[in-house]
Image (cartoon, rainbow, N blue to C red; front, side, top):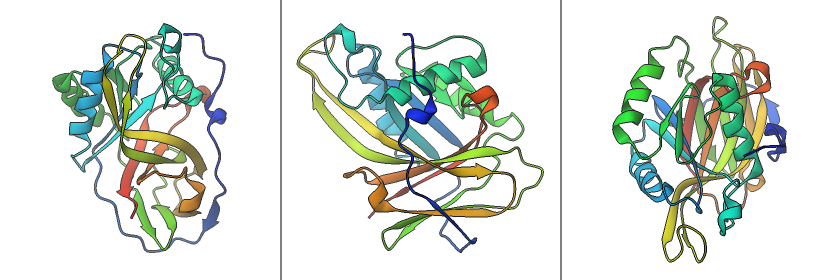
Length: 246
């Protein structure tokens, strides 16, 4: 599981900074769940199904990030991005525990549990929300006229962070013909198909906008993450939101 690429491997979209503008808030978010999964992992389908259930809770941002380090088992994951593997490894470095596995659910950027364990996920959400600053920044996310707008408030006492937007496909079903899941059809829910760094947030009110056409074709949702990046690795999530794209 040696990884050689960092977050800059993600595609960076063309983003313009604009004046703070009114936007419809996508809804209060209490947690972001990032499921690191693989189509070639026999333990992952139950976690994939659970993420599909969790994605129906609009107070959660539930994302599926397919990794590539199990491709050697006989099936090359059709949705894997090298940057997802690097992101998972970066979380382990931030935590200092070196725990990288599938299915792994990372909650609010600060804790991890087995991705198929609903009770553990619920407990992790409760624990992470008790940490000051976690998910404390309200994020406004709107989509209209072929454009996506992200707005953050003036919060001078809040920690600083990076602002990322990703395009998401609601459900992708794949027939597996080799490897541990041979003969199964695996459905990845809320599959992340690309990442775009919007900018850095310093605690001052700010807004960014980008064209929907900059997202990968076929995505039907967008999610935004405001996140600390200690020592160059992803860390605590300060705020997040998601929205359906019509």
